[in-house]
Image (cartoon, rainbow, N blue to C red):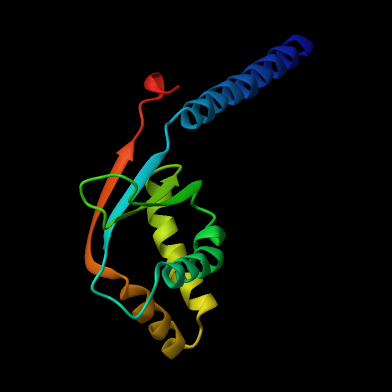
Amino acid sequence: MKITLKVLAGLLIMLVLQTNIVFSQETKEEAQQPPVIVVTTAHADFDYKEGTYKDWLELEKEYFEKVTSKNEYLMNTNVLTHYYTEDNSEVKFVRVCKDWNDIENSSDNIKGLIETHWPDEEKRKEFFKKYGQYFTGWHADYIYQNIPELMK
């Protein structure tokens, strides 16, 4: 009887250890997955003369502080403006997420954060109308994944 209990206890311990090893390997593999990078390219509207670069930057900072910086699903973000390219109207919005699910969660979260920080619908529309005047309305979205073996 004692031997049977010892054998059962040993098997139970092995089962628990095997389970931990299997789960820790899955977690390790997940951690090794490269992040997903979403790049949105927009174009500045140079025909809009009522606003300045400084005015646009203030709106961009407000959006960043109220929405982007509070989005828990974004690992990193960046806004890139023209420096030296063929098309000086380009503005690139870069968002880095852990995986595809976090891209979707991030989008859902953005909607909620916008409603939280601009609860008055008229003020929200006013902000985005003013913000939108700095862009042509054309944009493109690109989704990338880096190759870890080729990173410095």
